[in-house]
Image (cartoon, rainbow, N blue to C red; front, side, top):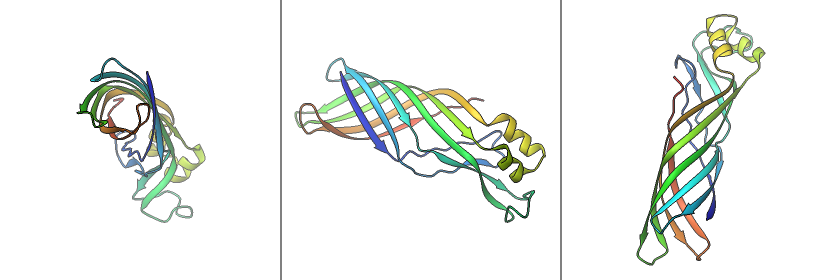
Length: 178
């Protein structure tokens, strides 16, 4: 068995509703993940992981804001925040590079993405006014949403001792609840 922890800069690209101008800011705040796994042999492992992505602000691009006293004309306005977390189950395929302590690996599996959008009703109504845009955002987006999607990863790992390794990896998960 093994356990690993990772810290990184997740990039999140999300759209809300019918993608008519609601977007998640792609801020690169620090996120983290933790995995536990079982190595069947030197080439194959099975991992179960948890990822906590950075909290991002949710922006709406408005061409004609309702409240001109609160908003300064067309532009992006913060209407809330989005917190994404995920669980993944993946097969890890490992290619040891001779006896150097270096390994190249790839991961293939499934991830359950959980998004929690939070905003106050007052913020949304101040931004959109009481119109169809506000109703779409208020009634279809706030709360928690879950989706399953494919999970892919690749990286390199170097064992500094028999029990400790450093790794660099790229991971990607896609999903849609439409």
